[in-house]
Amino acid sequence: MLLEKIHSSGIVGAGGAGFPTAKKLNAKAEYFLINAAECEPLLKTDHYVMKNHAEKCIQAIAEVGKFVEAEHIVIATKSHYNEEIASLQRAIDKFNAPITIFKMGNFYPAGDEQVIVYEVTGRTVPPGGIPLQVGCVVSNITTMLNVYESMVSETALTHKLLTITGEVNEPKLLLVPIGTPFSKCLELAGGTSLTQFIFLNGGPMMGKIGNHLNFNDQVVTKTTSGIIVLEEKEYLYQLHERQISQIINQAKSSCIQCTLCTDLCPRYQIGIPLHPHQVMRHLSMNEIPDDIDDDPVWKQAILCCECGICEVIACPMSLSPRQVNIYVKNRLAEKGIRYQYNGEELIPKPMRDFAKTPPKNILLKMGLEKYANYTFEDVTEFETEEVFIPLKMHIGAPCQAIVNPGQHVNVGDVIATLDDDKLGAPIHASISGIVQTVGEQLIHIKKDVA
Image (cartoon, rainbow, N blue to C red; front, side, top):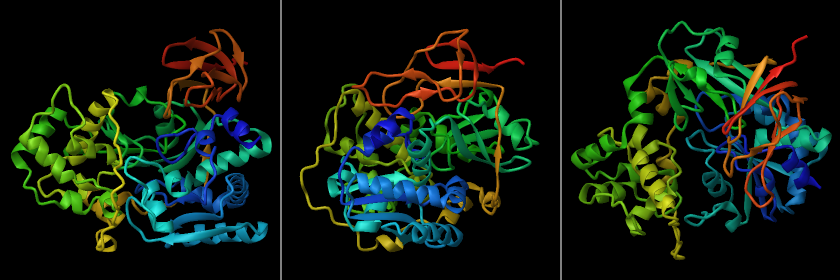
């Protein structure tokens, strides 16, 4: 069965937080939508997949679309991706696949799944809800490549395609085993001339920030989409890692209630009742209580997609509505408080098309425009000597190791799993070798010594 193959292969979403794919596809929907927007600036993996693996992707998309009984199977991509669109269309024609391509404008975050649903169908996903509630299932184009490999050869997800760029000597696309240290990826990109640097694990807007002091602790996971190495910039530190106490104090003293964070919010624009300026105002007038309750203003934070438009582009005072939203919704989650949609009419904003943010504006604001024009025609494939495979690397419960130190494993062997009633996906050995250690957080495997 298709879902069993996908689950046993350990496939999770390649384009975001890593929702288990078999769980997402266990549905019937009117629309099966493919996110091929390559949303984050500077990342190029989906471009490569569309141009070089279109036939595999189209076969998988058609099969999954049939499985979910979709009346409409649509690939949503950006209209200026000419080579990618041509490659996909050739594959669609070759297999006579019932798939159409929807061309979006060049804006961020075009890859947000609720934005894609609205762009293609004109429907707004209910606040706190999922696309299935409006008849849609959304998946990423590279996820579909992984599904194809699972369908055809039952190949497990053991390797990850990622972009490494920024202040590296040879920006590249890499295909490496899951668990490969970031330090090895940097070597493959020719290293960096910087002795001190910061890096983003992911894209410029939603990636996690670190620096040269903890770079060597990082490894490639199922959801690693990119590694961006940069000169130390105070702006990027503030954007990604300001202390919440500092953020709250600045919000109380400096928020001028201009409403730009709300006006430019992509979720607000499609009719979601999220008003970041109201959360900021609430913060300036009230302490966030230790026993935070279901105050309707605080609960708006749950609807934030954390795209970062509010703080990178909108706020004239350089405040961080996103970080406030993240903090508040984490506090609400600790209390088990969820957003309850009251059925109110969701009305998209009439000026939405004029309020979209071009990616070039983001790169200019962040000082990253000089990295924007790299193109990658080839992938560097590398098999490392050792891997450090995390037991939690996607949404859901962490897996439990089922191997022991000293045990020999082959690439593709299941090394960690979880109970059937828990959300998640099994984890596989990404190289063949000997298990060195099994810890609470990761499994260390080293290749056999010849």
